[in-house]
Figure 1: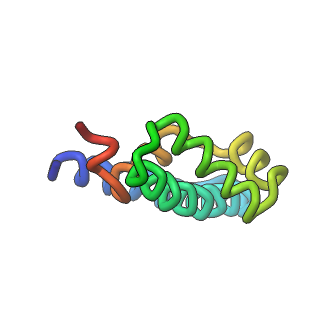
Figure 2 (figure 1 turned 180 degrees about the horizontal axis):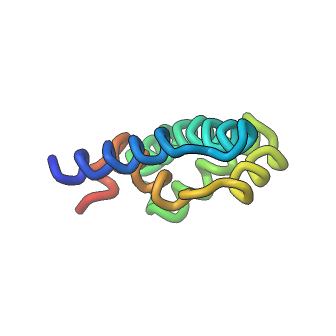
Length: 101
């Protein structure tokens, strides 16, 4: 468990400290982190209710679309780098009991 948390911290540190060629790219990554933090919280809540990973993920993104707008969510996902790594890292921090088995 400690190794997973250490890995997640290193991945997030690398993403945050990345040198971006433009301010716009930096804004996309920060928006991505905001989106994934919101989705991560909801994902954990849905998993705690007993839903499987896939259903929890879909419900979480549906909630994010309602909060931020579907076009904004889509734009962030399409333009983001390191999406999968960041999403898994945030989920592993927020509810490791559902991610690391």
